Length: 470
Image 1 (cartoon, rainbow, N blue to C red):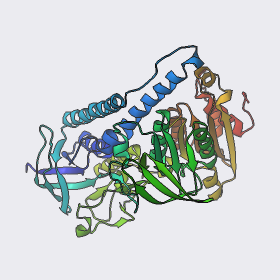
Image 2: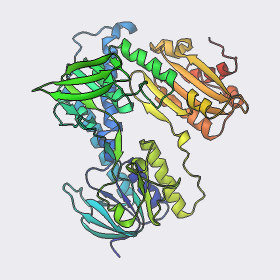
Image 3: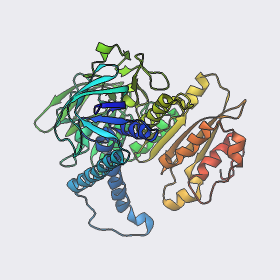
Image 4: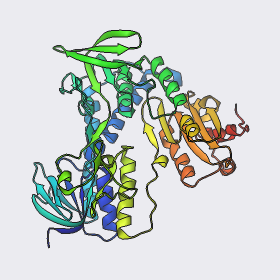
């Protein structure tokens, strides 16, 4: 049958398109359903375009500090439209690339909204702007249906975005101009990245967090170092603070804040609501077919399987951590399990997290507090970037690598980094965790000199009283 497949993936974000391609590699007949844009939120409105914006901000920052490197630069400025256009161009390039990869791997694209009629059957309602060659509306059959519909910005009462004064990440990525002042509600990765971008571009930025710590999922020591750096840059950080209400003016917003010191008001040009995301589980008719959900996400086992045979879920819609690389790996495991290959269930404790602000932050495994809560007797190593020759040469001496080991076995439990390019360093510790590496093996590994990676080695050495350069 023309409309019959082995696997249909609903959603073409990083989880969806990677899952579809891997399934095709395994010999399945595959289709992916998309209603808006290939590549999903990540490639079009999330991970990638924000990195393009942050790169522009980084270059602008270096221009402003040219003198520190023996250089001179005058008449330094920026064109907000050109910055946004570059970011959108990067997204367009990758969006086109996803279409090419799907075609190369003989994955059909079905354009429209999907509803699951029953296990093995979905109905597609066509949506506009279908790419050339995409299939349209109709009923399609598949032995296996994988839901990869992603997530959208969480909306809290009183903080409803209006696209003009109160933004989500959608509007924050395409500003018509850089606002003079900005309130960021929420200090997770999304909020902190936008706070970093807009502060570098000259905005007065205030970050509000209801919890005692910014970057709540990070190690407390790293989060505190980050806060100090942000405040040194001129970002105002308010923790244990709640936004009680927002009063919108013609071209400004006045926020009423409940702080530990009492109620105060703050008037800003724009507000960014960055209070997390929520899974896209609506409109699929999950209730009709009995798929179990919990707190806005689909319940799965470690291999993407729901409680309904033949129905699977991966990525943000299957729960935290809501990260593109988690979705990709989860999808790969799911189709390999369907194929009957030997696979291990996803271990979420070994999934790294990265925040691409200035300074960058990256982590994997247990924080110091979580390791103690889990009952481990631990050793902790720390090494500052100030003791690393490459960091000093780069003009980036502020940073820290923190490692946590089980004292009994020597096994690495967690790693937490802040500083230049740590999002590129963290993968070394991810591999070490997956291989259940001990301190002895890491100590005996040879790290190239001069590199920032030497801070990783020295942090391990420090945990055992053997650090050289501090």
